[in-house]
Picture 1 (cartoon, rainbow, N blue to C red):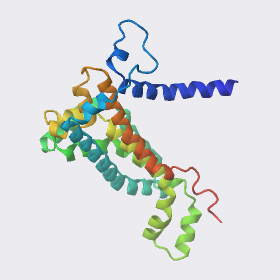
Picture 2: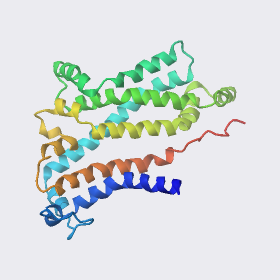
Picture 3: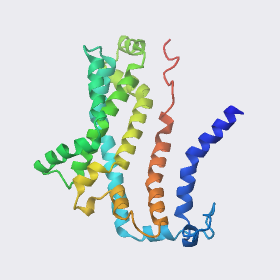
Picture 4: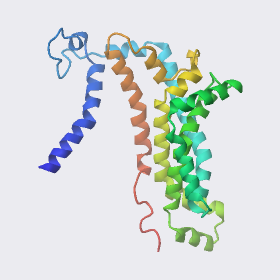
Length: 268
């Protein structure tokens, strides 16, 4: 009974907010403003009016495209920079390697609000504020420590015997990396990619200061901030649902790589 109760409580905690989000996104006005009466568990007259209004706004399509482009390019740039670094830190026994990894991940101990001012000031000086590239670089700066830290752990967990056998059989370092180590490290790298996507997709502070006054490159978080007091409230819920769907879709796309123990039993 204790296990069963715990599972039910966990499901309520996880599914409850999702249910409320979907409920309010399809609620009619009478189901939201009940005049002091209890709020119904499900709308009296479910409607897609909020979604119709949202998708009739041409600016919404632009900010949606902006968010997708910035998030995907952040993943690409973060992986290009982070995978070689994580490979070296994970496979080579460098002196002070653990201290270096700790220093890299400790960069994220500083709150974003403390680091946004110098970063934005630097980007303004080099003329990269109010640009896609500036936001992508800022998001990569936030995600890179996690990519390196997670990737180093993924490469380090691969048995040394596999790499040694590949070299004995005639494979060079590049072949060993691309045909053996990289596929085996994919679960960890996929986790890093998912986290990078979530970080970039949900990021607000750096985007706000770097895009200030440039609505053409606004992301969904800035779009949501601009209408946070809009009426009716179901419009905000509809936007939040639209914010969630790409994240869910991206997670399903890479979930096949999220398999624990992919290299278990591979050493003969």
